Image 1 (cartoon, rainbow, N blue to C red):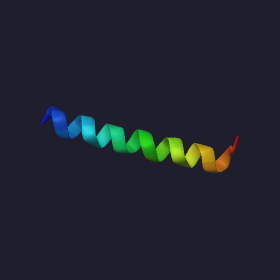
Image 2: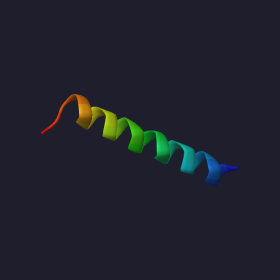
Image 3: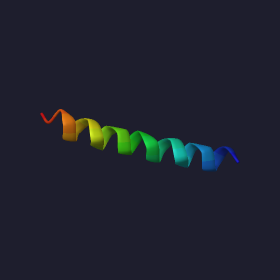
Image 4: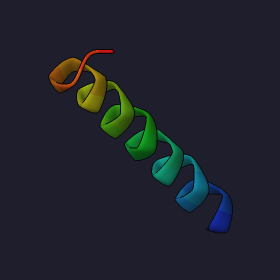
Length: 26
């Protein structure tokens, strides 16, 4: 239960990070 939650949160974090860099490229 906890493990799947961590994996889901990790995926969301990665997607948010990628989206952020698409909108605000360095």
